[in-house]
Length: 104
Image 1 (cartoon, rainbow, N blue to C red):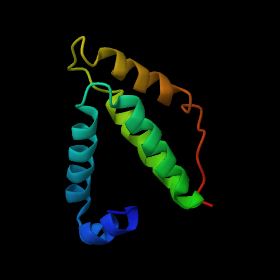
Image 2 (spheres, rainbow, N blue to C red):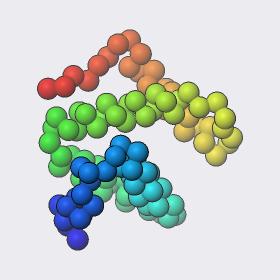
Image 3 (cartoon, one colour):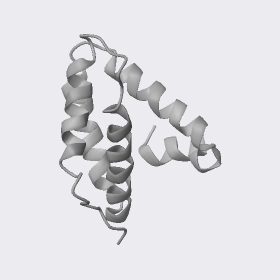
Image 4 (tube, rainbow, N blue to C red):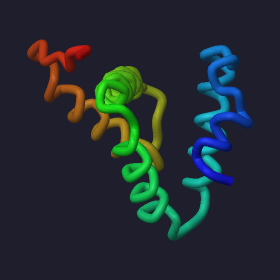
């Protein structure tokens, strides 16, 4: 199934934000849950991301930044996700001086 066929089949625009988020996390989690798949999936995700319209790329980065801001605030963690939370906080600290990705 092609990228566009998947988009059409899922009728993504009709999903609520909650439904879309649940679907995205389910797919992402399932793909991340296969040992040895992490780099390959990241490569494909990056490649597909770069095919999107450039304005949408910037919008998606703003969404990812917001996600990282929220994730960096997590206080209930253990050794399995501690480094990821620290990384998210450090990544968003880079933009604490008001750096904004404009909508162009």
